[in-house]
Amino acid sequence: MNKKIIGYGALILCGFASMVTNNVVAAPTVQDVQGAARQKVIDDVNKAINSIGKLEGNFTQRNPDLSISSGKFYISRPGKMRFEYNAPSALLMVSNGTNVGVTNRRLKNLNQYPLQSTPLYFLLKSKVDIGKELNVTDVVKVGDSYVVSLRDKKKKTQGELRIVFNGDMQLREWAVINQQNQMTYVKLSDVKVASGLSDKLFVIPDPRNNQIKSGNGK
Image (cartoon, rainbow, N blue to C red; front, side, top):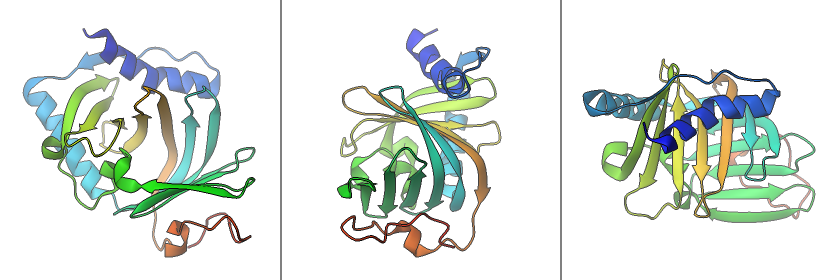
């Protein structure tokens, strides 16, 4: 079996959990999915992405420098997402449907870039067809979950997105790999369908004023 594939699955579903909890996690069974089974996973994942509406929950993130951060997330498809990082991190990341803004609440600065330039665009766009729009580079079954690796065929979106769905096709993890091959992992927990999420949650704040608030804007 491709050693690279084993590394993807083991690191995302086993190594990440170990880093977060400081516990030894038994390596799950890893299987490269091919043929008709591969296409079925792609179709199921595509359907699952397009069925996502409003979600909220908690997240834990492993950064390229191996540091760990956590916080609260909100997703409102199409296009909108908010990640509030717990202290000591001062970051707030908001997608308003067009741009992604990363605010440092301590330094009061803001970096913005087009949503379409990040692989997360394909999780957030109103309707996606991953079989047509993306190169599916790997489909791997790790334990009871599936890891699907995706790259933009048109290369407008930089980097690679590896998404993890459990056996019930619920989104639980993803990894974004940038052009420097640096990986950022996000693991979701306590995920639930949300209702009544305020549009204010998805406004990119101006760091020059003092109205950068935490979420819960329902």
